[in-house]
Length: 59
Image (tube, rainbow, N blue to C red; front, side, top):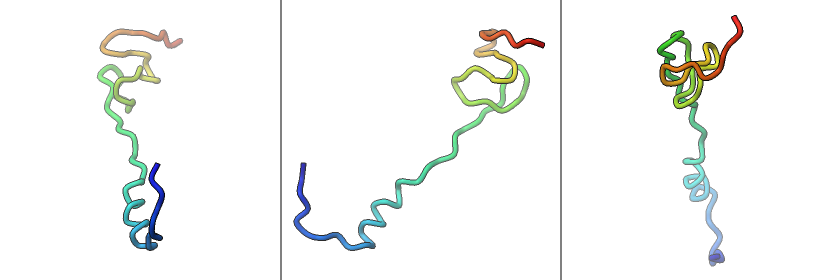
């Protein structure tokens, strides 16, 4: 690991840390029930994934 040779200024540290922000998760529309869901996940409303029912939702 490298050891800092000189103190970094506040502005330099803050410029580097400016990229550490969080991004909001993407949501797509479920093709079965048309409610928002996370991509590559089973729909929590209807239980479908890739046009197949993988979780039976009690109706």
